[in-house]
Amino acid sequence: MRKLILTGAAFAALTILPTTTDAGERHVTGAAIGAGIGAVVAGPPGAIFGGAIGAVVKGPRITRHKHCWIGRSGRRYCERK
Image 1 (cartoon, rainbow, N blue to C red):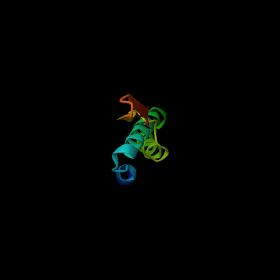
Image 2 (image 1 turned 60 degrees about the vertical axis):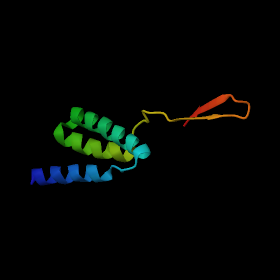
Image 3 (image 1 turned 120 degrees about the vertical axis):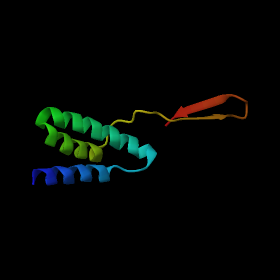
Image 4 (image 1 turned 180 degrees about the vertical axis):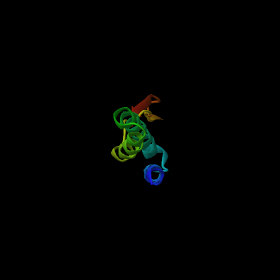
């Protein structure tokens, strides 16, 4: 019974993660942070539930996208998103 619950929780955590690249990064980092904290606090079951909760709450953005263009004067402008 315990294996069934853990398998179901792991499956639920994996189905929560989106497939889009931009939003997926934040879900994965949140799941990793949640799993790490859950493992420290409650062991393996805590890692599973912490990962699922972390995926829902989302984590910090690691990469920053930079958009650059050249203005009319020939000067290059960049902004981070």
